[in-house]
Image (tube, rainbow, N blue to C red):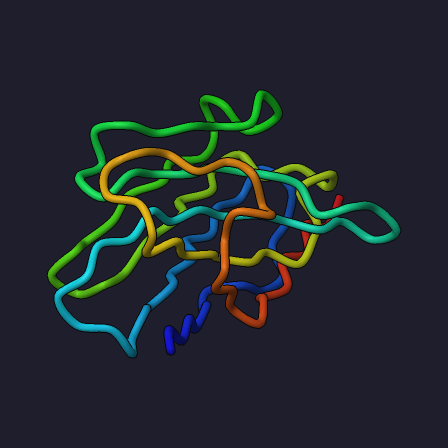
Amino acid sequence: QVQLVESGGGLVQAGGSLRLSCAASGRSFSTYAMGWFRQPPGKEREIVAAISWYGSNTYYADSVKGRFTISRDNAKNTVFLQMNSLKPEDTAVYYCAADPTVFNIVVTDRNQYPYWGQGTQVTVSS
């Protein structure tokens, strides 16, 4: 019912920046907790950042604190991930996820998200 489409991934040199976007569609007049996850090569998918409906509550993995910023534009049903000071270890497939079953809380457990995008590749070269 909910479709998520990520964009903004690509190849960037260490120290550079990328801005990921995730547009949600399929459900009108609904609220979503949203999050960003990533899966590095050969590793499990991990939480990057999450945000509540109003944006008043956010969560960041320790590895990205101070470098990444999650935000959302509810009028456009879009969540963003601004990634600065990128490192080679940030290389991964990045996925956005949405949980329409909650209102204004942060969801960090990937198992609680019923809707996922297809992912966008982020590669950081050294």
